[in-house]
Image 1 (cartoon, helix red, strand yellow):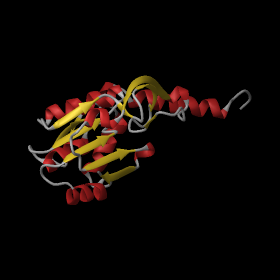
Image 2 (tube, rainbow, N blue to C red; image 1 turned 90 degrees about the horizontal axis):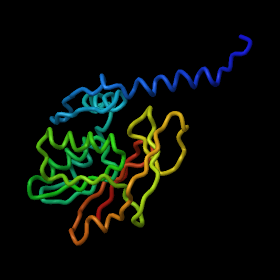
Image 3 (spheres, helix red, strand yellow; image 1 turned 180 degrees about the horizontal axis):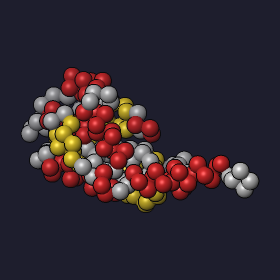
Length: 196
């Protein structure tokens, strides 16, 4: 077709999908692993459904259930909407604690809401990014994949939202408390765990 730019046509479709992803109609409650979860967007609802059906998170859940014990303190960096923080909360019990960090405002609101809905009183939430030194940074959040936030500007600008977030070193929050295990969610949802 004369005058048709396939690149801009494809981008318009992707931009429309990104806008549809954030519509309030996707904010639905779903029970996953025994927790009541309210997703903030379509992609996070799909993520929860995949966890519920055992198509995502199965190996991670088994790993954490084997490693985490009552009374431990677990640090969750990049807690997203809180599914793993809630798992950790149950595993550490009332004598343990979960310290959850989520800098992205929509995901942090979902994290806090899901903690309240599940009466998880042993989860301490922080709307901050963990970093080497205190300050502020620009967080780029993909509008197609709410679990894909980055301190780098690797997302296409029209398909992401950038927001300034506070950054704090873990030691400034944890202080003298002894922590046992940490979950660090990195780009593209890859996770890493390490013991203190």
